[in-house]
Amino acid sequence: MKSKIKFGTAVNVSGLQDPKYKEVLSKEFNIITPENEMKYGSLCYTKDNYDFTKADEIVAFAQANKMAIRGHALVWHNQLPKWLTEGNYNRQELISILQNHIKTVVEHYKGKVSAWDVVNEAIEDDGSLRDTFWLRGIGEKYIDLAFRYAHEADPDVKLFYNDYGGEGIHTKSNAIYDLIKKLLKNKTPIHGIGLQMHLSLDGRPLKPEHLAENIKRYEELGLDVHITEMDVRIKEPTEEKLVQQANIYRDIMNVALGSNCKAFVMWGFTDKYSWIPKWFKDYGSACIFDEKYKPKPAYYALKECLK
Ligand code: G3I
Image (cartoon, rainbow, N blue to C red; front, side, top):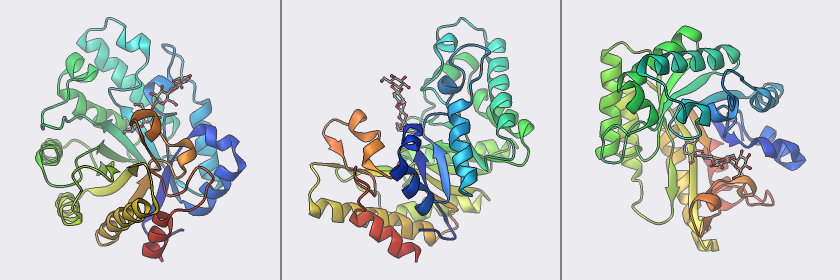
């Protein structure tokens, strides 16, 4: 399924040992995001000792299959190395650590990664700044600094702010929008917004018209928009629920295709390696292929949209 909009998935490095995983991945997608291997704790488990082996493996696979790569994620509050979170660093030291991390990683992947999620999930559901390791240590300035350091390291790579639950029009998405506008006003080098899109069959549905309105306001700011981590989790899947799931994937893809959205990336393509069952009790079946790589109605719905 290849199309003008980049169509992709997160890649789980264990999957690359699985021939069927590699076959489907290379056949169906033209953009990938390493699911965990480019995070701070994965790359720099021991202080001053970067190990790019696993991330490089994913990058090599993508390059061999002519896929674009989204780098994920330079600054996040999760999956940080212990030496950092348990260390005792003052503000100036933390700024140096942040700068060094971003420089090391972005320079390593210069010319290979086409977009970076520079800051991930900095806003809470109530619209306030998330109380994180970085906010506590550096203050709000960490967001601006992160983008500046990434731009210094690779002036050609597109830099994104990425978040979940900010897809429609509501308190959180308005707060994200305000943050982005503030960064732009401050001449922070930011080029795009990532809408993660972790959805569920239960709960409040995302209205496609709200998504379209949200995408439009970012395009009016001159930013690229990517859907970065889509999945639709289901409790006790039935055929009927899989059809409802397909409808959600279709609706989101149609909004993306009707806008200037440049990438539609899912957080995994097969339930075999999906993060959902480990994180949401009783939920699963969130991807477009099942554990045995059998395409679900959602796969055919997307295929139809991308024709
Ligand atoms: O690598 C260790 C392994 O050595 C250890 O034996 C094993 C024991 O549990 O854990 C492994 O680490 C796990 C890691 O995934 C790699 O599999 C962590 O425990 C687990 O917490 C981690 O979960 C990841 C999660 O981010 C962490 O917050 C998920 O796979 C990953 O899908 C998820 O991705 C995030 C995006 O980065 C940002 N947006 C939300 C999305 C879903 O939470």
